[in-house]
Image 1: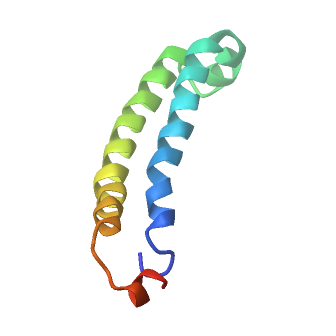
Image 2 (image 1 turned 90 degrees about the vertical axis):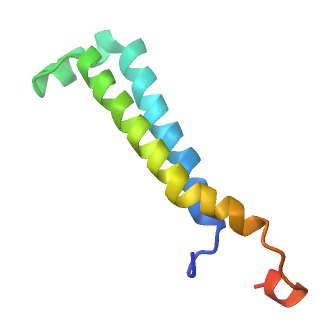
Amino acid sequence: FGKFGWGVPATITPTVLGFTGLTFFGLLLFSGQVSPLIASIGTTPLMAAVLVGAAQNVLSKSSKYSLFDPCKEMAYIPLDAEQKSK
């Protein structure tokens, strides 16, 4: 928070949700196209989607509670004019 302020950590949560959400739905919607690629690592597109969905749940909650919520609270801390401009 000291180096980048609260803006960068606050954007990590939506970025994580967007990336994992697109990956999850991409695996579901384009399972036929990605099936050979997924089969090369020894699994099915459905199992890969389940793993990505589980990772999305863990990553979204951890980034929300560790980054987004403190940033949200920092935005509401009353500061004087000099500190607001830093």
